[in-house]
Picture 1 (spheres, helix red, strand yellow):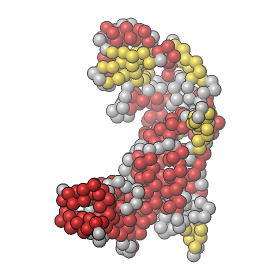
Picture 2 (picture 1 turned 90 degrees about the vertical axis):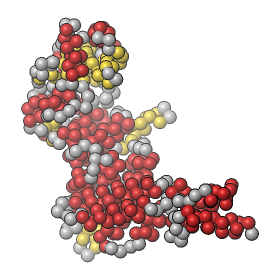
Picture 3 (picture 1 turned 135 degrees about the vertical axis):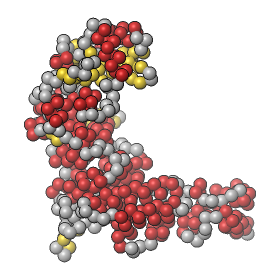
Picture 4 (picture 1 turned 45 degrees about the vertical axis):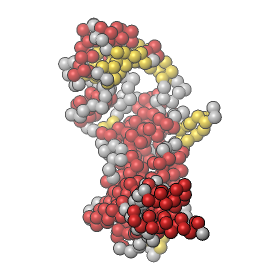
Length: 470
């Protein structure tokens, strides 16, 4: 346990109050992991917590103390949440409790929590208080709701998504009763904020076992639900991810694939570095497979020609619906769109890679050489993961070496005028028309008709200005 957390508990104990570390921090400590943060629960009320903090010369902030009984302590530049024992009851809101009251005991406080592994408490001596079997569930690596799973999900529908996220974060699986209770709370998902739902999905995407949580999300039907967003003073429905519902039933042809489209997608995610952009690209790269207009059978084999371009459109549509960052949307769509092109170049030895890179440099997808090179590096990582997702025993050495070659080429390909290696002679020659001249020179370098060198640019600029003056 962190020393400063021990000091907080001890200060509250010395003032006559019970105090415990509670929730995920205890779970992580029992799993021999360093907790990301510490939550503290105590029998003290908010004003009493603040009085203890004042005696210790700790800064304290009353955060909805009257409503939720939470005080934030600021010690050494770090924040620690201290909450009074409390109980709660839920109403129409799908996430926030309708009424909160101060509880009389630690047991009452932990019984309101979501999963048994998050309902553990620890005191200053390291003694663990487990009223719901959380330690057993940690040993069994399973997610079980506290008490009645249906009631826990009905209370707070965001717990459905938290279950998926914890499956990926901890590499656990839900117990059958808890998973079976999920659909009974789907009606409550419509009242959740799309921002909260997407935040949970993004947190899931970068977890070590993201494939487990995503599999639960899709196969349970949770991804087919809609949440909501307020626009112009009124709520609008926001579909979550129904575009993936067909993939578990979409077969693929051997010998190129040993898995169906959904298991393949999950495998690709598992082989992809835990980078949000790459995980998004892995998630969407085959989303169009099996869809109308894409899936066909040729010579007795399933084919999905054009799934890369269709998948890029779907990725952009979903991510825009989720209101993701435009730059991230653009990169994910590009990675999905080009993943088959990369395989074609790497595996066939055909095609003009330089010409393709020139085309990409001249598109509106990139703003600098560094950005293009980074995208190629990501495309390489996706291609490696895709190959392993097709056949886990695939040798990807050639893909890696080809990717490095492409990245080197991309690193020498100017995308914007700022990537041109010109010197002061060009602005001296062109004056107020320098910008127009540089844009022409950039296009010529991208077309391969001009070298990216200072002397070449000076000569080209002189000729360009002479043509303008005649």
